[in-house]
Length: 184
Image (cartoon, rainbow, N blue to C red):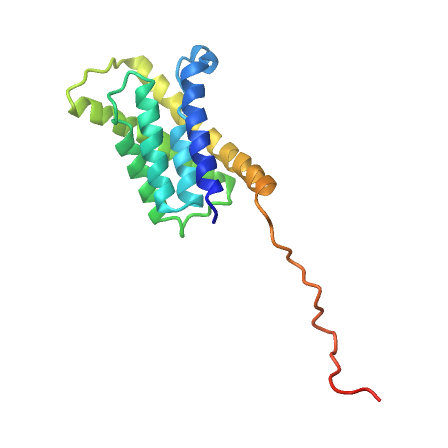
């Protein structure tokens, strides 16, 4: 694998965090911000190496925390935990199945939110919690589940457009007979 794929993933992470912070249309319409980082961590865990998973979790978490009200670095540990668990079990996961992508995105988005909240509560922060927080958690979870297959499709299209595909058919036919020796 060449270096373009991890760089492309990190660029999408940067753009996703920027879009979440800059454009609030979905946030105002739904009442909650959909987090793209767990979906990106799921994609990276199933399609790249461990170093890329760690880079996405650390860079994405720090980017997200620097533009939000979170303490700096509090989002890194949940993303890293989710990414390494999925990466360690990726041989057992049917990554090409849309249902598996949706389920992993759903679980990752739900778990990232809960783990970040637990870390905030353990660290002495006092986040504003109420009944509306359940709605926000549901929207974030469902949004992450829906966006994960979309990310797989987008990266599949980018992969097809940017990377060289070797030819599957050779010019040699297996039923061809080769005559050797001198012809008289």
